[in-house]
Image (cartoon, rainbow, N blue to C red; front, side, top):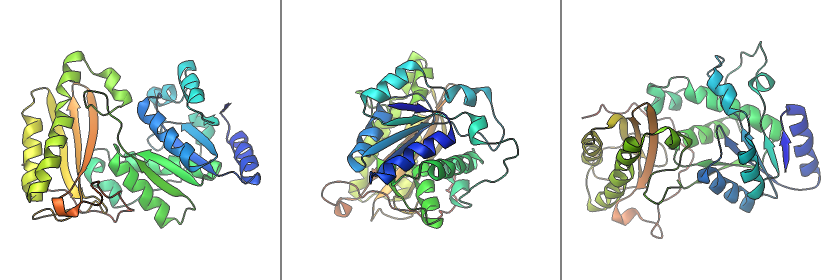
Length: 306
């Protein structure tokens, strides 16, 4: 496995693979390696002969922080874990390498980035889209793998790839969970023991909502029930609980007739956790599983919390 820190070196390596007729998969990450990242690598290896994992925390354009600089470093244990997972190259550029002092160009999905999480993190998806565009220009992958836990991010990337006619496939990989149901995230390490236990309300609420969705319940009632369940947990500070069309992220009303996605953003102490679940009415099942999300159209603003 090669550890690469410069754009020119990454281009040279990827170019040599393509010249040999080998497909390239990209797994973008912004933080330390966990089981969710390993699942992305496994999916990438099933799709391409060569796998690149990028480790780069998107700066807020273009205001940089010490936290961003720290998260772009590759600890020895992460390097070892990625090597064991069969990664061919780790691309870990510094912020200065990726963004010059005179950088001023940004990429944005103008409507999709402003809804849901984008309402309280207004430049987040612009940062993600800009960094991913740069990574694709450098690596030129045939496929990129993203986790479904960050569902809106996945939809933003798909929208951008479609709009800009970028020649790659974007694959969503199901959320990886710990044995107790909590979605795997680097943020979990920052939870106190009490908040870690309280955070299990996320997966419990989603699992129950998945069953309720099969009963003909309306979207508004299901959303209200999920929000009330989360607000009943004293340690949970609800940021948003939304139900959207699973394919378009558009708002929905009335009884569920097609797959929908429940999107949660809940703060436990100082840590904001995201989680999601695709739910569907009984007659919308396809082979017993939810349909995978497709490239979205910009959604409307979410209705306020009850």
